[in-house]
Length: 102
Image (cartoon, rainbow, N blue to C red; front, side):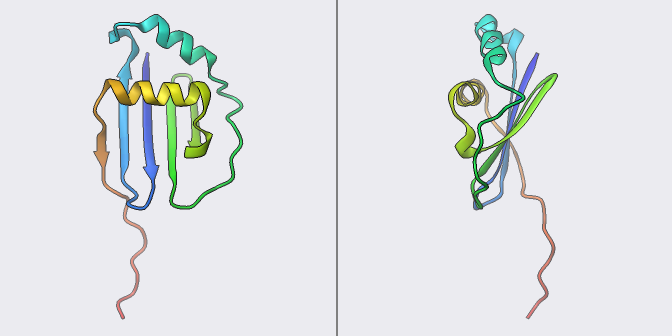
């Protein structure tokens, strides 16, 4: 099982992606328990906030997108575990519409 966390947004708009193969971890059973504890169908509510990070968490068959302030409890624990176990892959900001020259 793979757990993939992507973080985008913020001022720079840089996307970072971390991926962990649970079976390759020294404690896969703890990962499975944590993944089962996550309320995948009911993420915590939070108002939209411009220029803050957005997290996309994928763990087949589950997927959730949360604002930075929604990362609480088991959500935060999973994201922090993934970030501690692997280096992020960096993706450049997607180009937006060009502004006309003045």
